[in-house]
Length: 99
Image (cartoon, rainbow, N blue to C red):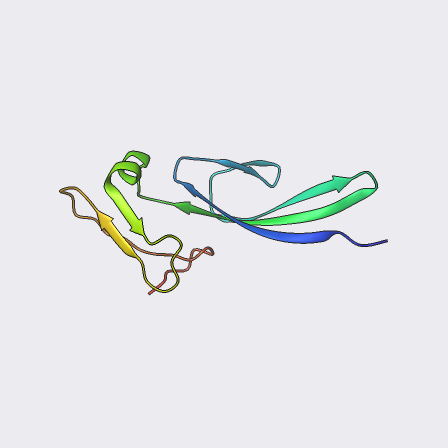
């Protein structure tokens, strides 16, 4: 008999949104485990890394920003339209600031 399989996934949500992971609705960044059961017990474990993007409203994101190319390999362009001053930081899937 084989043991359970384990898989990994990444998910991003915006501040104020939620997603059902680890048996509950999650609002904060972190790692969450979900177990998928087969007829004879544990079949698979999915570990999801959740990142929450803070400081960008949905309206701003949809109407005022452009990030390209997508996907990118080393460099990308971020264009923000409007009259406001904006501070932007780029983080990886674990929340570590990229420099």
